[in-house]
Image (cartoon, rainbow over all chains, first blue to last red; front, side, top):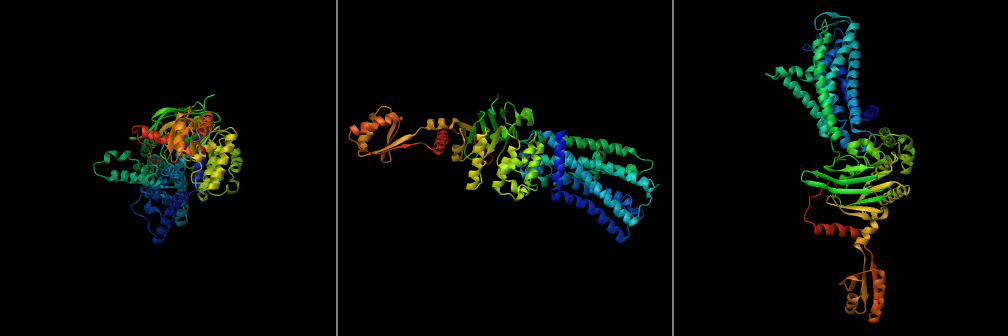
Length: 271
Length: 316
């Protein structure tokens, strides 16, 4: 465990030293700014998205609208940007052989990297949430929110529900991070791993809308990006949240275990 | 105490290609061991197997009695080195890179950062990002990274490749100093002069196989030297040599008579030549250079053997 934490700390320091890290965070914070600016300029919110029509009534609706927008490509991309790179960049730099000839076994190295990739995804999500809240508050103030059940939720309670929604939203992001890590280990090429992760996310979304495949829809990772809706119903609908937890756990554990086995057993012949 | 390196029957195949073909190696404590072979002979692949970076298809490695595939990173206790050129995180400074490596090492590696930077003469540039480093500086940083582990066994893969003459001299001086401090060193190289200058034992690898293993002196003895004799009467000199006891391989060679033999037989030959009224113009001992021995070993193997498995080209 100590070894994994050592690797984790250094992975974070390495992330702080790389441009790619800030590009993802820039995306995460630019999107709510662009959204709020556009809505304020047009004085009109998106109608066909949950909470879209309320963004001019309460700034608290802004982060929730962006959760829906972000599920399609923004968060899969930001998550993949680091998770897909974190092993493959070692292949590219030839540094895998450098770190694998020290006193740490491969398993804690992989664990530290996985932890760092998940942390990055969390920070990006948090950054988006904070900017969206601040932007929404400036635009429309923190007024009561209308829930998906049509009831009014007071600002304090709404903030708690938004916090819960973001946490539930983070669960499928962990699944994407694990897939990115797996692709990063398999592909040994950052671009291929990042694009591969994003493509898989698109394919899963495509499968979800194909006719005749409705049966597997509840088990698709990308579908779990909407489980947070359960929080915004009155009373709280825990069923989609519980479902998302175990579906994402399967995706997460399966990808991580396969990735770890490959990483521990693979030959390091390049670099 | 177990030997620093003990490899038995190492085999690595890449599809049809056999990169390393039943290699046995034993490196004893205090050896400066040259691992010689032309590019593509399988040196780097063998070194990667020693360090646990790749899995042998057959055979096993023991470093101080521990198998990297069984004991994991613990097998590398007291072992350090690099294969091909040492690589670092280009966006971090040299010092940050060493701090990272020290964190990944057990013990007081962090406390040694300043001293290893000094050893490789990089103290003044330690704050610069590695992406701005020259090849030679990276090689030296590679040595610094290895020394952080305070190793008893140092594995170096072609450490002077790509260095300018001054860099080569400095690197060799450094290896010599480390060897004098009692470190066991395995040095792979395709540069014969380097091995000749630094090593006491060698293994010569060709097409994945060890074709010679032993002390450098044994290699010289095995190949032997010869003498070239020029006289006032070559025909008679040839007959005298052929009749003289203790000489072998007597034959005319490029206007001289060439033969091999011990010094006392050569001394008595000079008297015999005088008695036969043959004047000696030149009697030149010729000691085989390591280069000649190397080609002797590798070329004769090539000629003598049926075509074995092909060796890997790029992944030497």
